[in-house]
Image 1 (cartoon, helix red, strand yellow):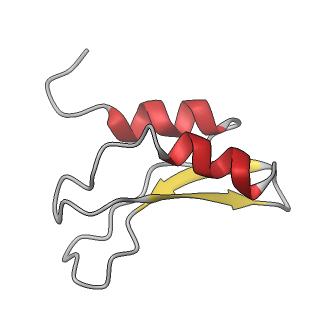
Image 2 (tube, rainbow, N blue to C red):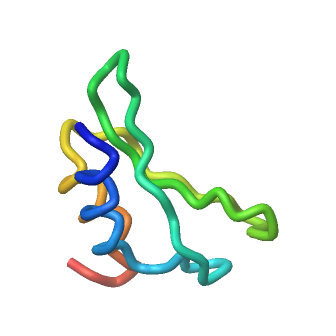
Image 3 (cartoon, rainbow, N blue to C red):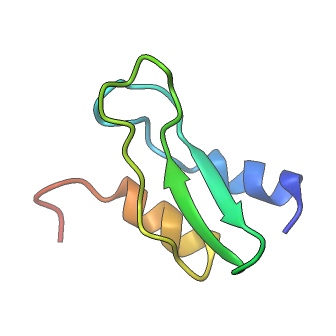
Length: 69
């Protein structure tokens, strides 16, 4: 997947629920899977999703908040 494609998916991401900053999508080339992660140095939690087969799945997991079905 190209960097431009990744950036397009990143535009769909909600801010980090702990620090409010913009997360990024991480791709593991060896496994061809994707996760969303907050890398903000001031974030006390540094949350990360599981790795998913597609960036769509990773974005969906990140954007889901507690209490949502």
